[in-house]
Image (cartoon, rainbow, N blue to C red; front, side, top):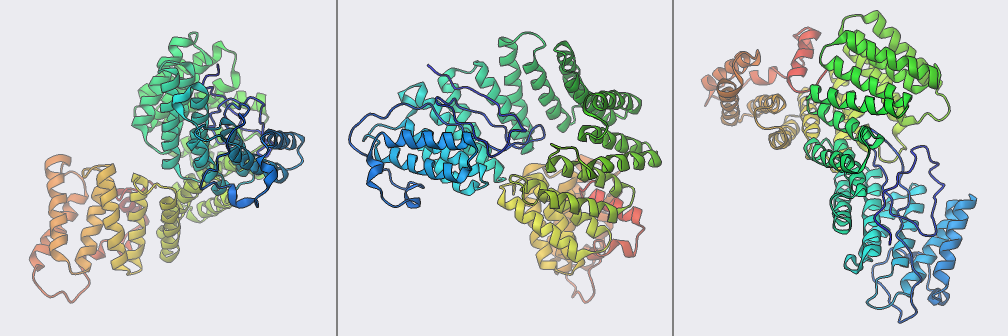
Length: 593
């Protein structure tokens, strides 16, 4: 009797070579995340011969409209035959389009031959295969309705085979949403799949642990770190109970937990998990993985300002990567970038620039097998260093190159949105306000489409676009953006967070410019009260906000015939301040320069 098996597909597997076994297991496919990026592949359920009986036509089938009625499809032997042809076509490499033809007709035949009241696992399996072929062709939108039909077929109450099919369908649908950049929907499907798996196998089965880690990584990608931590702890508990001490499974769990702890600012706990993971990898002879962990340890040391220890960790990793991968491998470039960042932070700008140039040299002539995503990520990190040393034009060139490499890649919309947001900030800093507004607008559009409209990052980008609109004197548009940002950041960060307070200040200035003096006064009074009662008055913005409030109170009720003083605090800071002061102002508004 099959369980709900979790099997990983290698990340370098060719996307069009879909393996469809005769008795396929359910498969977990890693969604794009900070740890792995891969395309989804089929998660078909176990098949059984369909019994002969009365035919059942299921409504709203996405396959129904793709082929004209064919009486031969009523033959119960035709579905298995066509599905086998689809498998053989894929295996022979003849091309996915012919396999797609066979898979569509197989699904239609299984659907016609289904017995009334009897859910057909053959139909579910064929739909999983059909959706996988669509995904291999990059036609993810067409795969979604196929999988939605597939998850309606099984009846979980009929036993483990049906649970297997339902679990597979939800996980594959989650993969497909992930490749479309719809992270929230993707996570919802994974959560439902995990629930089905737990009901079928119990909470302590090792395969449940694999799915928990799988789902935890998806939550990390969505920056939902509390839920990610909860799932990762559960994974550790399950693997601790079922695996040998210092196992590879435990090491993988601890690396993920370290990533979560680092994101939450708990660097000491992150370091502890990484050291334990490194010991496990050493015990299992995984030298390359030990080097990768050394890089992560170096990152933690750098966050703790323990720079000498960070350099030592990076140099250890660099030696291993050069020896095992070669001098021009992207892993070597990634360590160069970390060293460049470290030397920039410690004021050694010449060394920092040298390491950046070495990394770009590797990315300019990538070794075979290097993914565009890997190169784009490296270029994005290098651009941040150039931005920090006041070379925005060079940073912009690198970001534009990175974005171009990702444009046609599925599942990269959120990443592209992040790049566009950074470009918008740099356009703003060099006075190209129209370009800044357009970049922010494009980023916001992508974030809305991918379901990230409730994240703190989305709120920050709205705030930045509002500032660009102020510079273009689009005051009404700026007010709408600041208002939306305020609602999101209050929900996600709380009203005491620096990002939220920055939006309050911007909104007060905008209301003042619009003549809504009472609203501006109300906001500034609440900000000052927050600082006095909870945050302290040492912040340099406190005196500025106090002065602005005094001016508004003095002028309340008068006809305003001049440009509002509050608005002057936002318009063209570079014309009245040094670049250093302008950068400081941006940092206070929540964007890290």
